[in-house]
Amino acid sequence: MIGHTLHAGRRALYPGLRYFSETPCGEIIEDVLERTDYPRVTKQASLYVHWPYCLRRCSYCNFNKYIPKDNNDHVMTECLQRETETLLQLSQVSCITSVFFGGGTPSLAHPSTIAAVLETVSRRAYLSDKAEVTLEVNPTPAGKTKLEDFCRAGVNRFSIGVQSLKDEDLKILGRDHSPHQALQTVDEARRLCPGRVSVDVMFGRPNQSVESWENELSELLTVCDDHVSLYQLTLERGTQLFKQVRGGEVTMPAEDVTAEMYQCARRTLQQHGFLQYEVSNFARQNAVSHHNRSYWKGGQYIGVGPGAHGRFVPLGEGGVLREARTQTLEPDVWIREVQQRGHATRRRIQLSHLELLEEVLVMGMRMTQGINPKHWESFSPHLGLHEVFGTSSDVQELIRSGQLILDDRGLRCSWDGLALLDSMLPALLVELQRQMSQRDDRADGRTKRSSDPQ
Ligand SMILES: C[S@@+](CC[C@H](N)C(=O)[O-])C[C@H]1O[C@@H](n2cnc3c(N)ncnc32)[C@H](O)[C@@H]1O
Ligand SMILES: C[S@@+](CC[C@H](N)C(=O)[O-])C[C@H]1O[C@@H](n2cnc3c(N)ncnc32)[C@H](O)[C@@H]1O
Ligand code: SF4
Image 1 (cartoon, rainbow, N blue to C red):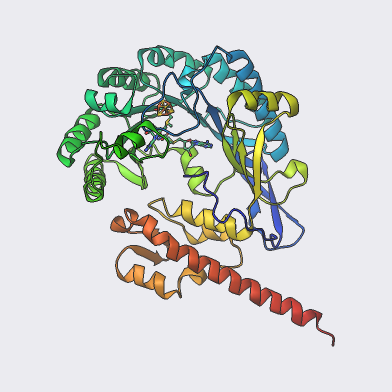
Image 2: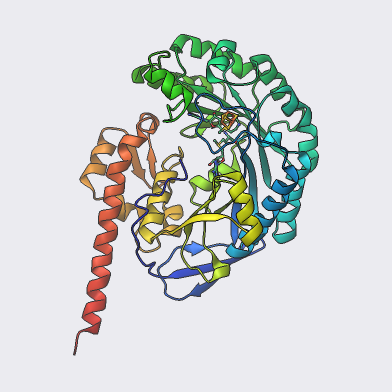
């Protein structure tokens, strides 16, 4: 989803860099460096920390996870701290706005590991007491008993992988908990962090019908807190489920059935007071996830741990371009690299201005509020949102057909359009590429004219 870099191979020079420093998180001091045409760079970021271990492999999952051979908590903790320090220094980020411990199964980590990483962040950057600190939890009895200690370590939001409330479905998915254990974990998390508990649920599961999904959702709504993430089960190559489906052992619901499940869930959640704020995310009482929202708003983020990815400008190395960075995948190799050179960045790609705008577009359109003109302008000061999309006949057609809205509030999907976002993005991206290239041609023309012999 976010690791995706559009046109990663292409390189183009940023027209310039405007550098904003922050004191410490709020006030922005503008300090124009070099040329004048580049979106602002701030000294704030969110932090993602990847815990790469799971007790077993769920049948559908292709995330970066490994079954631990032995307990290496101590060395993992040291390396997560070291990589956090290094990347904070490399990025010169002085304010961390949210922290997300994801995985794998980060609830397998010792609470002291979580505390140690947060302590490192606080030592090296500003981390407000109020900053959102989320931990993903597998709802097993062992996970549940550690929740209180995780809170003491500094976690103030839990994201619980409930996935399904049907025992037989959890078995097909290869989960190691029952629906009852999941509900007990949600209860305990709500007791500890009222209003700050999210549940992840997957739909489009093998043999699932719309009717059974509706019943399951109703049950979920009686127990959940104020945040729900609904993910359509994706059949990932290389997983056990993929093989089972290909071998005919398991049948996935047809596309029109999963589309109906999605629409039915959106309606039901709305009726229960949840606002959909993103393709897969719903919140009531304003319990939106700050961490996820900062990704969708094109904020900088630092990723530490095996396979984590990040998006930031390495100001500390003299960098001026935002980079897409990925850390080494395999934990033992990652540990060695962190011990040797302080971090294990395996891949770094400088994003051109166009690539950055493509990401801002793709991520921003996932939010129901879409992209407002000011948000766009902070990344594209010289080519406004209406200039890019206002004149395109393809975009006009999407507006006429009721899928897209472009007005004073910006560009966004309609209710129906959000479900069809993937089919709309190619037209939007083509328009962006066309307008950016015309703009570069005009700028080149001006440069050429001004350097013509008099
Ligand atoms: C990778 S898991 C990590 C958290 C934790 N280990 C768990 O399983 O709950 C994060 C979320 O990704 C979602 N996910 C993983 N694989 C998926 C797939 N193939 N299709 C859709 N969602 C998936 C699940 O809903 C899960 O809660
Ligand atoms: C699958 S989402 C689950 C979020 C959950 N539903 C919630 O509301 O808290 C996990 C979060 O971690 C981020 N994430 C997952 N894997 C990552 C990775 N390898 N590097 C950086 N961020 C990652 C996702 O972008 C997202 O923000
Ligand atoms: S879904 Fe979660 S618990 Fe299952 S294998 Fe993937 S990361 Fe591990």
